[in-house]
Amino acid sequence: MKTSTYRFIAALGCLLLQVVDSLSANAQQGPPVSLPANITAIQAITPQGELPGRSIPYYLRSGEGERYLVGGFVACLMARGIDTDNLYEWMVLTGGKGALLPSHTHSQTHEVIFVLDGEIDLWLSGQHYRMIKGDFASIPPGTTHAFRMQSHHTQLMSMNSGHQMTALYKTLGKPYAGYVQPSDNISALDPAALKQAEKAADIHFDGKPLPEGNAQRVVNAQLPKSVVPYVLAAGEGDHYTIADQLFGILCDNATTNGKLLVVTCEGPAGPMIGKHFHMKHSETFFCLDGQLRMVSNQVVLDVYPGDIVTLPAGTIHAYQHLKPYTHHVGLLTPSIFELFFRSQAPSTQHVYPQQPTGGLNASRFAELDIVPLERPGPPPSPRH
Ligand code: FE
Image (cartoon, rainbow, N blue to C red; front, side, top):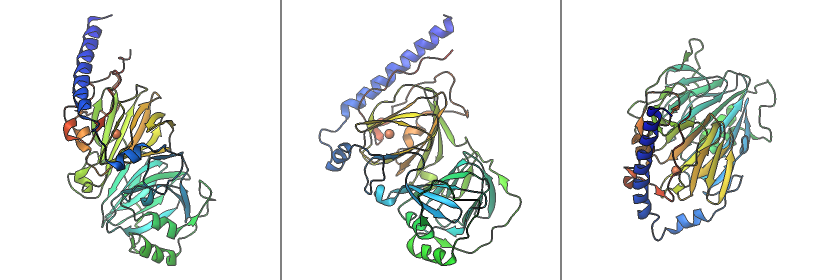
C-alpha cells in the first residue's frame, strides 16, 4: 500500500474519532428522560403504505396517492394538509404535451417545483423558462405563474407550504384511478371549475395570456438571499459534503421565510447513517434515482424512485444509499434544520466525492433540533 494511502486512512481514522466523540457527547444528552406525549405517540406508530388522514409517519410507492385528472394531467396527492398537520402538501403531476395550469397566484402558499421527467414551460413573474429534469423553481406567495407540459411524458413535483392546495386539485379535477393521462387529447379546464377552485383553495386565476416564444433554458446557479421568485438549474444549489455524499440546498429559511427547506442528497452505496429523531420539524424523503433503505420507527423500507416516506417530528429514522448513484430529495418543515447542512464542508463540485471527504461535522448539534440515538457507522472505505 502506498504511503499516501496510509496517510489517508490515518486521517479518516482521526476524523471518525472526532465525530464519534462529539456524537457520543450529544447522545449522552439525549434522548430526554421523559419525552412529550406527542413524540412517544409518534414513535409507537408502525408506518403503513397509504395516506393516513392524520399526521403520522407513512410511505407511498411511486404513483400511489389520491389522484385527480385535471385537464391533461394527473395530480397525485402524496401528502395532503390532513396528513401533515397542515404543514405542507406534496403533489406529483404527470401529464402529456400541452397539459397546463393557467396563470395564477397564491396569496399565502409558498410553492416550489422540481421537474422529474420531460420538459415544462414555466411562466414565472414575467419570465418564460423551459425546464428539464432536475430543474427547480421557488414561487413565493403573490407571484404570477403558470406551467405547460412540453413532453409526452412529463412529470413534476409541487411542494407547498400549508394546507390549501389539495382543494385546488379536488375542485379542478375528477377522481381518477389511472396513473397517466388517458390519451393525447387535452381537455380544457372548465371556467366554472376555475371559479370554484378560487373559493376552495388558495388560488386566484388572473386570466393573463401566456406569451409564446423565447423560452429560456434554466441556467441560474445561485440561491437569492431573500423571498423572491427564482429558478435553479439541475444539480445547482448550495453544496456541502459529508463523507461521500453531496448535499444541495435548493431553498432555505431566507428564500421561503422559514417555511420550506429543500435539500437534495446524492452518493454511492454506503452505510446507514445513525438513527435519530427531531422534536420540532418534519422530514419527507422522495427517492429520485437509485435505491434507499430507510428506517422509520420499527419499519425498514427499501425505497425506489418515485416513492415517498414522511417522517413527522418524533419519528425515529435513518437512511442508507444502496446503489452506485442514489439521489433523493428531502423537504424539511419548518426550515429550522438549515444549520445542520450549512455547518458541513462546503463544496464547489456538482458530483459526489469519489474519495470520502471528512465525516459528519456534529459540532453544532447542541443548537440543532436533533436527538441522535446511536453512533453513525464508520465512514466508507476509500474506493480504488
Ligand atoms: Fe433526520
